[in-house]
Image: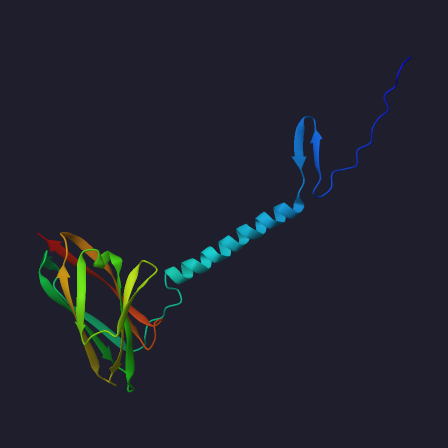
Length: 183
């Protein structure tokens, strides 16, 4: 007796179907594909937002403020020295020195022990910098001076941003300071 094989009909693969075709498993999972694309889009958007925050695109320069620094560039390890920050207000109204932020590149070789006048509090942010909160008045058409009392910790060439923030933490003048600590 002869048996004839009848052709079989296989419906086309739909979403979520898994079939073995020619010895290979084939997955057609449109929802999985859409989910992966959604996750990637979310990561890209969050990454771009993080860059804006990290690189300070939301930070503006305070109007009519001049900031100058007086400090030695070369110090010996273990020696104490001062870093004077002079904030000049060119407006006809009083302003507020919100904070001075010092980045770790500088603090890796320099210890800041205190300031005159004293800061109200200090906080470490993002493992990147220390923010010294002052809330000091800067008189109209006047100036405020803050002296940081520092010490060279170890030999090396240390530099990092100093952000002087006036009238809020997002309105800052930034300058890179460098201190070379020798034996």
